[in-house]
Image (cartoon, rainbow, N blue to C red; front, side):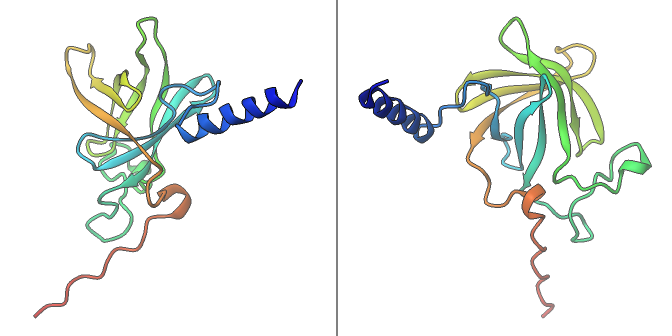
Length: 169
């Protein structure tokens, strides 16, 4: 190989990193995604042969007790004390023949329930996410947006302490 070829290869690799190109083994879902209401960021990543996602940022990370939000709506009492931050909420998503990602489950801590779901990439920065019961017709969709790594990554950094309560007058 010539030095010129190596320089070009290095330049292309650096350009790819600078412009957000993903490694060859990555999928269009890999990365951080925020829901349409700006309440949660999920990190989507490979989990074995499929894709999964976990909660890494919450706009409101505290429960009514001002401690990290727990999965208190879960129907299984043994799971109600686990923290929502760091919780795996999407499992088993695989690329479908029609270009969507699905075949897995979506757990919604706000409801304490799991649903079937799928995601349809709309662009490199947006995807339509749909959760449903029985048939996709009986579901709800929203558009999620790709974001940079959040300011804090609750699974790695922990949930920051709750701000102090205002003092009574």
